[in-house]
Structure formats: structure tokens, C-alpha cells
Length: 94
Image (cartoon, rainbow, N blue to C red; front, side, top):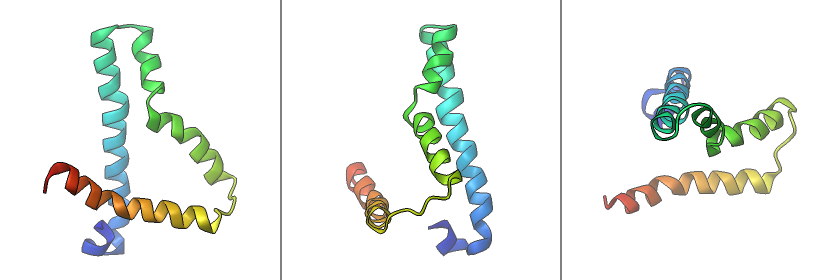
């Protein structure tokens, strides 16, 4: 959507912004919340148990191995990604 609105040059700043938001929300916020609740090493381990960071390891391995994504999987994930915005808007009641 960002690329459609602002052009292809906006892709890199959008990725940097997305990575910063993901880092803040999934690492810092989870760590602070866990530290306030249980403290210590439990807070550190709870950061690494978030689904986004768990999915990061196989995603990086798959991406770095340069394996060709099967067409059915690419189509299926593309359709699911396109359906998320309308589903989110309906959920929010917009």
C-alpha cells in the first residue's frame, strides 16, 4: 500500500520503519512487561518465546538458502495477505 501511494522509492524507508516498530513492540515491550510481572531471566526468555521471533529463525533459513517457493504456497500466502486488511477493518467495525 505504501508503494502504491508513495512510489517505489518509499519501500526502503517503510521497511526500516516496520523493523523499528517490530523491534519495539516485540522485544522491548514484551521484555518490560515480563520484567514487571516476573523479573529476571524469565523476562529474557519470554522475549524469545514471542511468535514473531520464533518464526524469524526458519524464515531466515528459508530466505538465505534461496529455495524457490512453490507456486501454490506463494498464491495462498498472497491471497491471505490481501484478505487481512478487509478482515481487520470488519473486526474493528469500520
